[in-house]
Each structure stands twice: as C-alpha cells, then as structure tokens.
Image (cartoon, rainbow, N blue to C red; front, side, top):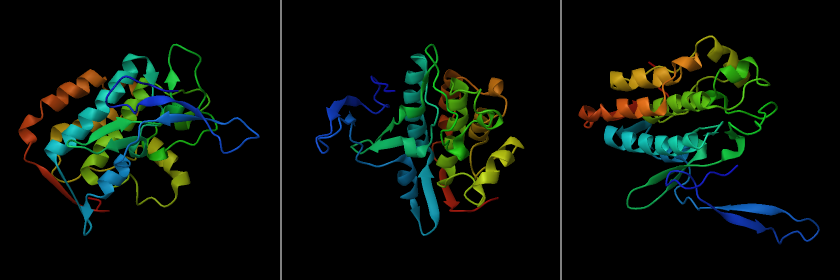
Length: 235
C-alpha cells in the first residue's frame, strides 16, 4: 500500500517494468530516494566513543516530523503496522527531513483488512496485543502509537530497545509480562510520562496523536537539555 501527499511520508513516483528478465514481467515501485539512510543509522552515527549525544531541540524536531507523517496516514484511515527506525528514512538537506516508508504492513481500516498472521514483526516495537493472538489483531492506530512510544525512548538512548536481550524468542513473553525499557537519566519527566503512556499495554490508555503533539508543545522549556548516554548503559 502506498500513502502520498505528505512531506513526512516517502513519495511514490510510479511503477516501472524490470527489463532485466525477459521471461517474466516483474513490476517495481519507484519511490523517492532518501540519501540519508534510516533513522536507525542516523542515531548510530551520533554515537562517538561509546557516547550517544542528541540535543532536546533536535530530538523534538525529529519526533514532530515522524508524528506529522503518522498523523497524515491516520487521517486517511491507514495504519502503518510496522513503525520502527528502519522504516523511517532521512533525506539530507539544509534541514534533514524524516519520512515514513514501507507501508507493506499497512491496513486501510475501512477496507478489507490485511492479515499479519505469518508475517515477521519487529518484536521490539510491536504492540503486545499482536503476541496474544496475531490471527485476530490487525494493524491499527493504537498499535502505531505503541511503536511510536518505543521510538520516543530510543531517541533518548541511541540504541535499539532490549539490545541486552539475547534470546529474542523469549522477548514477546517478557513484554507481555510488562518488560519495558528504563528511562535514560536526564530525560524530562513529562517526556517519560508521554512515551510510557504510548506504550501502555492497554490500547485504550494510549494517547491520540493530537494529545501527543499538545504535550510536546508544552515542553519548550527543556530546549537546553543534551542527552549524553553511554551506549548500552542500563540504569
């Protein structure tokens, strides 16, 4: 599924026929080129000598762009379904732009739903509801909000969540039992409360996008904060 029309969603340019194989007609989607790689690599590049550094101003700028793209898709009744830093791309320029990509797991909520059963989920960012009964739960707005909450935490740490967990097969059960990442020291309490609300186990307790934006707008007094996190540190 493609979503177009927002500066914070990867642009769909068209469809082309792969001329490399004359026996089969393989069509390929042509998307906007994101020359800055993924958000995951962007954060990794901010780690120097084991230390991750990001300013509050930059963090909020990234968050608001991600939310802008997500809000645009939700307003069109489309849930992403697999929101994570590898599906958020960077377009380098005078001001780096962050765009959501890979709507392959997306569901248009007023159309026939796309089953996620049998599809690999990015466990660290996946709504715990998927682990209970993946055949019954479809991508939805609240599952995107859960994923967003995990990304909000990652923007303060610079590392993938649960990176210390070696047995990923056991991770879903641990998440169902309440395992979440711990706050990075120095994170504003209002921001911590926000991402914790986003990753609530109960989808009904997760905030709407408009509420998230309101709370971020109230955080202007935190501009001078610089996160300086030792990579891999767990408090």
